[in-house]
Amino acid sequence: MSRTLRRGAVAAVIVAIAPVLAACSAGSSAATLQIKPNTAATTLNIPGGGQLILNGIAVVTDATGNAPANVVASISNNENQDDSLVSVTVGTTAATITGPTKLRQGGALFLSIPGAGNPVAQVATLSQPAGANIPVTFGFANGGPVTVLAQIQLPTGDYASFAPATPTPTPLPSESKVAGLPSGSASAKPGASHKATPSGSATPSASPTH
Image (tube, rainbow, N blue to C red):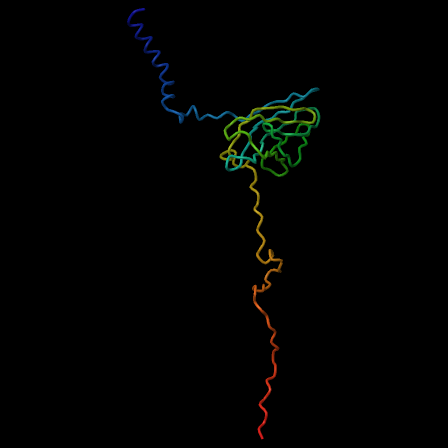
């Protein structure tokens, strides 16, 4: 190879690796390192025909990045019959499901997605921090179980509305109720003595002198 060709080949190699070096020099804030994976999705093929399609699966923590956490998913029923969501497990922790879980044929179920009548699946503990991927298993009456890796998300940005509801604090009883007294009643001071003095008592007049 001639000297000119060798110089051209070296220049081509430098140009090719320049973007890689630039990305490395940018450190952890490089734009390419900020790309997050898409929310998990999976399809469950049903014996006898049809599918259950699960999209947008995520586990959304409370404001501190801890449990309780909501399991979020959109589940479409393309079976030839109705089905029901019977369980959700995050890691090894079973979620508590509240609300309707029936999946009508051709219908959909919006799990832990804000909206009237939508069911909520919530776990009391998490074994992984926000940002980690964790297996989530959905169990169905007809379709059986299906497991997918879903990311644990903080309740910010697109996930802000999926955060677990903050419990309403219980007001403390007033002091009078603690003492067992009706509100507004006067309480006696300890050690105070109460002597009844007849009101309007007559004072005897002086005896007349003779």
